[in-house]
Length: 342
Ligand code: G3H
Ligand code: 13P
Ligand code: ZN
Image 1 (cartoon, rainbow, N blue to C red):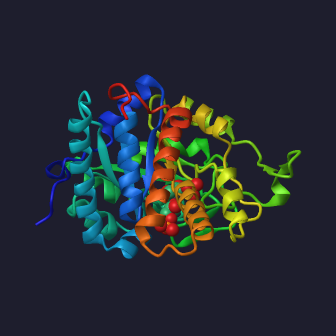
Image 2 (cartoon, protein in one colour):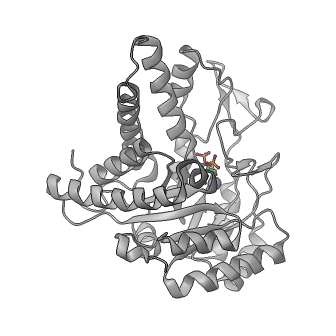
């Protein structure tokens, strides 16, 4: 017998996206693989009063164990509610548990049965008609259970779970109405020049600023605008939206790391996207890098430490600050469910 997401205190993305549209912000979709990341996401989103989508990739499911992850998410909801009570918050922030880059019907089904309130079926690498057929099948299964479904059109460069695409294929706006009406998806991920991971652009695609830091090519807002015109008031998703924070790159490199020419999407462009029909922005790499930067720094500065809490604790605090700043300055999702606290 499966478990319903509602019994875990989770929400689907329906009302979340309606509000994000009406108030012109994007809901953060942060990936997690371990307890510290999850605690940081919840703390930041409760304190900034931001809705949140907790994202689990199939890689995360393997790393952390699928059963463990489902109970972690349930624990995260309980932690959020206790924090809200303790801080005297008005109301509750909505929390969604979402499968990131689901690649088969069976994986989506297993996640729905274990309490996920939203799934992505990523058929973007398939021929168009196969993408439609697979996505439609997932929607037909998820809809009666009130679970939200995200589909994708267009391919992002970089690694999408197990699949590596050397080059991006921009979404063809001419396909979006047909795809959405034939599949019945609740949201659509599109490709407008973002990409996964810490090396989103090759140096030859970029220019360099005065400090020698790569400046990436701009996102294709013309494609986004055409998609918006064809799908009025329909929730659009941006994957690969880490900005690859240069302070984290510098800290990593200054403490024994090697991340030369790591480059992401400028936050000003993401801010602009959050004001459009983009209702969900996916960020994973920035969390990985902020955590790694903090841990590397602790190891170099305190070489005698061996208690994991002494390096994971500061890393978790750095993550909280980064997520809060993203909610406030990039997504615009802070303060949407009451006044900020903490
Ligand atoms: O889109 C990919 C996400 O960043 C998840 O990455 O497959 O390494 O867990 P992962
Ligand atoms: P980043 O690698 O840019 O953080 O993208 C994450 C993502 O799209 C998860 O689906
Ligand atoms: Zn992605």
